[in-house]
Length: 195
Image 1: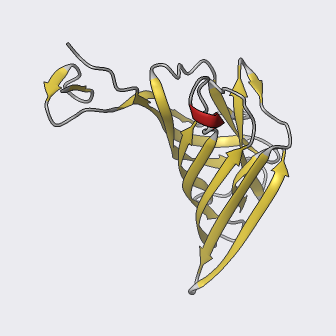
Image 2 (image 1 turned 30 degrees about the vertical axis):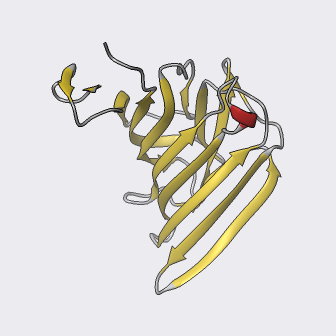
């Protein structure tokens, strides 16, 4: 039996053995350069999930992801990623890269009202001592409204081929800043027997 964390935090629920815990919810209309979280304890949270939206300051800005370790970005050219993009009417294309200095989550989004990026990103960091350096990958679903207000639906996955043990991440536009943003960050609790 686990502890369900939600509206009735701490209530024993026999049907809940793991839980997503909200770490932060942020809404802002002031300009920021990036969304950064450091010091996320992997002994408490096995995975992280970020759900939200951003509006770029610059038109046609891409959305990039960086793992962070001890307050510093992991920027070595060890990132590989792939994005499948669908767009009206019944069209699609793919974009893949290897040995990059960042993980591209989404491509060029506009910066006008109702444009920008929307995303649901799952992050699974490598934890020291776990099998064969398996970790440091992300999967995501995203929407971008480009600079002509055109819809693009995206699914993607990416990997950082390094033995780094991240305790954070950074989400940042390829150029400029975020003028508006609205997101929630969740952590997946590490399962422990409750006595």
